[in-house]
Amino acid sequence: MHKEFLMGNEAIAMGALAAGVNLVAGYPGTPSTEVLETIAKRNPGDVYVEWSINEKAGMEVAAGAAYSGARALVTMKQVGLNVASDPLMSLEYIGVKGGMVVLVADDPGPISSQTEQDTRTFGMFSKVPVFDPCSVAEAYEMIQEAFDFSEKYGTPVFFRATTRVDHGYESLEIKDPEEYYKNKPEGFVKDPSRWVIFPRLSVKNHALIEQRNAQLSEVLSAYPRNRICPEPGAGAGAGDGAGDGAGDGAKCRKGIASHAVNFLYTLDSLRGRNARLLRVATPFPFPEQLALQFLDGLDEVLCIEELDPVIERALTYVCGKYGLSVKIRGKKTGDLPLSGENTLEIVDRAITKFLGSGAEACREELPAPPPLPVRPPVLCAGCPHRASFYAVKKAMGRQKTIYCGDIGCYTLGNAAPLDMCDTCLCMGAGIGIAQGVGHIEPDTKCFAFVGDSTFFASGITGTINAFYNQADMTLVVLDNSTTAMTGHQPHPGTGRTVMGQIVEKVSIERVLRAIGLTVVETVDPLDHKLAVETVRRVAAEPGVKAIIFRSPCIAVTKPAGRSHVDPARCIACWKCIRELGCPALILDADGKKAKIDTSLCTGCTLCEQICPAGAISGGRKNDTAAEPGTPAKGGLHE
Image (tube, rainbow, N blue to C red):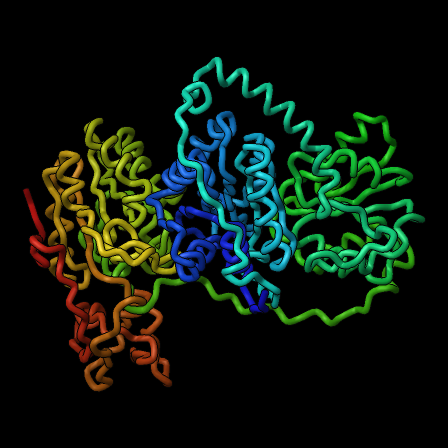
């Protein structure tokens, strides 16, 4: 054993390695991404790791490994679970042989997601057990227990970590490589009666799952991380501080039930106060017998949780089932916010109100911090997506046009002054939405923007649908040669894997031509004049056509030069500032003429190309040659 200071996701990764994981697959998505990256970096040499093209593919790869007796981990964020749900729902009916953990990072807030969906609720829906850690140190230990649990009961399990655990840091003791559990997969054993899902097998296994989960409710009531605090002689437990601050719970008439990081907030708030506390580490199957012990002798319970009222509903059900007259409070009663991330302040206010008179005196009043400055997200200085959006905007002018966006850096194209993202739903959806609008409004020019990574993840199906159903739309693939939004992970178009293998790139042009598109053009968006001409020409074509704007992300390429403004030539028209919205373009000290912040400028030259006075110069963009065999300028028009 040795001590390391780890991020939560790093701790989860190291716990998986300690548990003897054999295969890890996943799709990048904040706040889950660092788990797979850490395993790839700290790989002892016998673990297969891949960035799958999407979460569904990752789930199926992990299932195949678990069928073979391997310990498998699949990683994703909460919205990625929607993509993976098709195989998962059937997988629970089939079961697994090796331990299989489905790590889903939930994002209360949301901080970097479209939704605040709660994997605890998804666990109940899919009938998959859920482990819910409250701290970095506990996450390290709990994921090892999750693998053991999965293997013992032949079921995949959810490991639900939220942003505050994923991105928190803690110093903890971890195992040395020689201490890792060594799992030796038996291999796949053919047995169609077990591995081939048919209605008869589904009916049989559904009944078995319901019986098993009822039994697991009792098993998990004895799971040490589900517990009532304080307990006689109870210590602090594994890194969560349990046993501190709850007072003499045996004499209380009021109780508090909590989970995950909210449990730590509750412990902190309860210092010096008297309340019985229930910590729920496995929200599904719910530890019903432990809950009964907790509720015994109480008049009221406050449930402190995020996001769904999972514990509140479960305790209400237990009270009804056993005829208990305990009032259960929480989100449904207005004691906690119905949405958003909880903070220590929110939890403390709720507990203070719940515990009543005298409670306020137990807390030291701290001055309110000043409000944080508003910093709206913006495309980076020199981002090629800005040039792509600007070219399309200029080319289409005042024509009736809809611009359907997608999930990625380029979603920021919705901000002024570009205003080039009219819709955004989920990954790949912009392609389908553009088709739907076009079928209803044939006089509208429909554009769908998608990134290169998202094209491979979920854009190909929509493109095939458009071609097959004779849609009239322009697909714009924003190819910056990386998965930029989540930290520059490789994808099939980059020519390398997360394990460092150099592989043949999957050509977006060839994929589009194989589908049947005859108009496919590749152009550098930083060649503004050519980009505008290309958009005008391609958009005028009938049917489904595609433009690939190819220019590398500025975060993975070094600037070759930086632009500057000649004050003598600047006519103070502010066109560069008003039309581009580049953060490197600012006003001078007098607030009259344009100026370039050289600490931000990447020398992309876009502002130089649109300046009507020729007052900007000095930039020198990097060589952004197109794919081998494809002209870098002028594109390909078949």
